[in-house]
Image 1 (cartoon, rainbow, N blue to C red):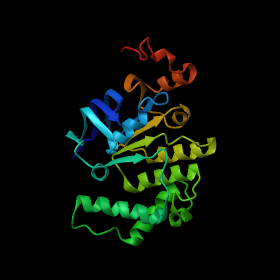
Image 2: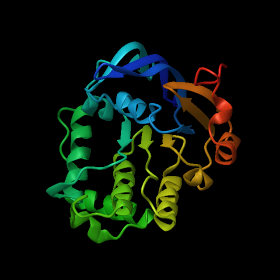
Image 3: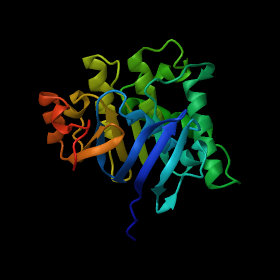
Image 4: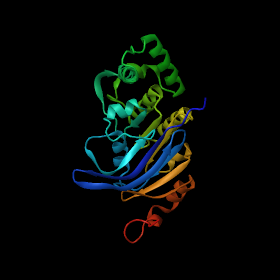
Length: 261
């Protein structure tokens, strides 16, 4: 039996936050199994798109729709969006003192299981520990990290690696990585990129939001989208990222602040 691949479809999406319109008609098709990158200058709406996809209540959808598996997810709360297979890696992960990395991830897994089957029991601790150690080894994360409080006193690189560990453990169908490369030195960036690379599969779609080409030197995207002033103004191959690195964003901007396409 051939399994149907899921896709995230964004149709004419207009979004405001606190009365200020940020997204101005986003159209994007993001299939499972592909790696897409969204690039653009500061304050152009990239993170707004990420939070809107995940259902952050501060972001008000004025018009348009977000479809996953052919169904609108706009009515779904963030936890329900997570339960259908959408994952968001935060640009600035929050610290939760008193809650260990292992307990946090195990609670999330149990929540997903309960959502799929109300009679499901929690993942057995031995099974969870075995799975987590396997993923930590795969991602080159020290096993002692599981016993530390989530992001409490973590370096920027450690926070981002734990985000990727969560993605590995939760096994989403669509992962949105909001500037996962921000604040990382070259070595940390390489490790994070290698971790994402080993998780790539036909069952996982990855949407990388970034300012810079450097993470795309390790993770070659299938499609690069350029966002300017709340709109996708250009889409193409990974060569687009190289062009941006060399020429900046001036070539996609017209007299009115964006290129007409």
